[in-house]
Image (tube, rainbow, N blue to C red; front, side, top):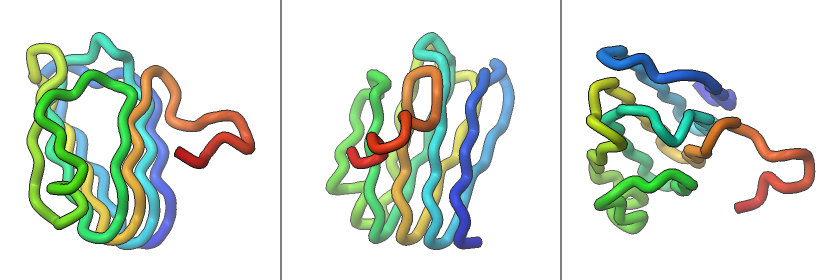
Length: 103
């Protein structure tokens, strides 16, 4: 409920992925060539990404609105939700080397 969730790996076409926590952080590392539809929501947390996700307005995400955006053909379904934690979507790996976690 309050822990950090880290996922690094492929998003399989047609796959369904759901990550949620109350006050913990979500860290995803995915290939830039992934095909996924991301549904993103945080109420008091933050969101950042290194991927070219269109139509992502960080202000909307921080107000608790559900934001849906597509990478590639969007065939995998990825849900990311946290109440007060941060959501970070990165190329390749979910974590930075020590000392670089501040975005």
